Image 1 (cartoon, rainbow, N blue to C red):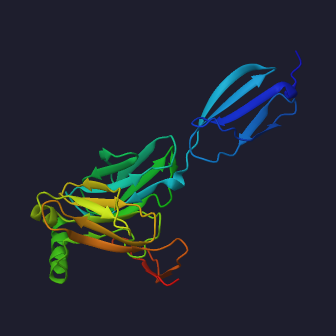
Image 2 (image 1 turned 135 degrees about the horizontal axis):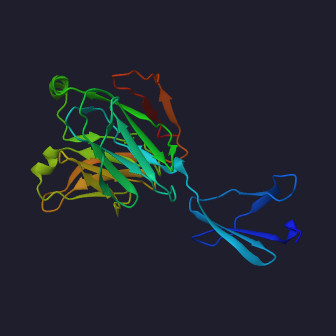
Image 3 (image 1 turned 60 degrees about the horizontal axis):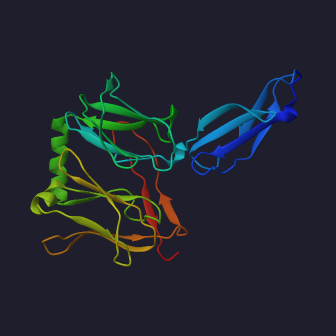
Length: 290
């Protein structure tokens, strides 16, 4: 039989909704026997490609589509030899696939432990064994995400103790502010870390986050090896958000933040120069009147 390309039927759909996705088919050989089917996915999900000829189904193909730009990595900080480190990888909206994390101290690959998996949020811990630069490679379906590999510096315990003494002279905070708590915009993830001292002081520790209308909103709370609590939430409107604890004790406001609109302009100033074996900073200021 003579092959007739006009009898070929291609159907591309999104598996979760059956939405039909436009496609193209073109010949890639002179004999007109090899064809290429292409389509542009609009969302990260599995797509189904049905190929038929003269009304008869020939093959069903499942194509996993992902968007690695949706992956967010947080809490990657410098550390101390022998002290566990925990960081988070948020894969919401990425699509189907495999998350891969490789941690190296320059001499060997370190074992990593998945601490918890909360609805596509992976909390990964490892214990550095030697001082110096460590690399953390995060990839999805074999593709490195933006910023990977992430570089951190690990200090010897003696060096870290000297730094802690200097910091204790200047600061006595029970609450550490992280993320972009100052200058955070709507739909940007904000997080804080609550030190052990606070949770020890309030054994019946309960925590909630309120939006500008004083309505309690959803948040994520994870405890690390040192007993500290990481609280993370995503503001959906502009205004003052508060992180509070109460329960049987009087209400205590642990942190407040003024969330900006998406249209608000943020100014970034200073130099972004990366130095090895040192902390690196970038400063952000915002104008709430814009």
